[in-house]
Amino acid sequence: MSRSNETLRNSLSMVVNSTDFSYAIRNFLDRFKSNPDSALLVDEPILISQILGDHGYADAFVASTAAYLSQVHNLPAPSWVNLSCRKMHVPYFAAKSPNMKAILLQESPAAFRVRNLFVSANALHRA
Image (cartoon, rainbow, N blue to C red; front, side, top):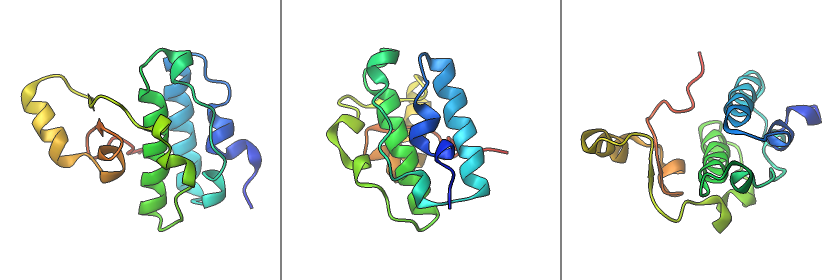
């Protein structure tokens, strides 16, 4: 069974800025890779976009990440990933150039696209 400090919820509980968010996501991905378990995803993380002032990006990214990991590892996706507060109201592209936007439209994983996030196919890749 998973230790509670390894959950996505706990990983994000101390985020106060975008650097914290980046580290928390990467550290969680490393832990999840070593032990894929739906118990690590089931508890809804706090909403942090208001803290970060990012117009919903972090909350949508967290939901996209949990949904993607669930899909890839054939685990049940937690219900909280489908909440409207976990989706971007306006499309967000990880790149600004028109050519890159076209590429991101094509290669962004479905778990991200349905939440209006357009990222590279390897956005969650960890070495």
